Length: 121
Image (tube, rainbow, N blue to C red):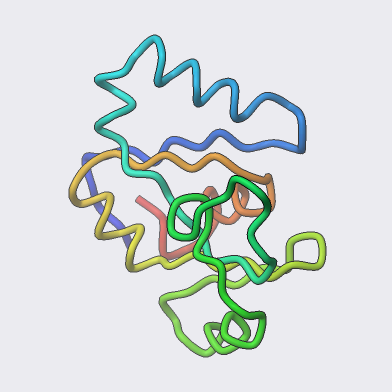
């Protein structure tokens, strides 16, 4: 169970709903707040798209490597539209101990962030 005074902020929804513009507006109009938030970076089995950066947008890894993460309790692995994505629960916990965390992404991960037993509290 996670106990922290810091917040996990979730901008989640389907494609083209406005997650990225909302995050950009947060950075533009509240730069101090945005700069204090750690981004939540997931692991992803797909190849990086043009303009995406490994370690910033996702941790891009081969599918087989992400499959192996299923055996570790510290990871939640999800199939998201045919790609495997993994959330490192330990990294999230450590980041929340340091400050607020921002997740901008799909509703599959957003739902896990809202309901996973390791993230209660």
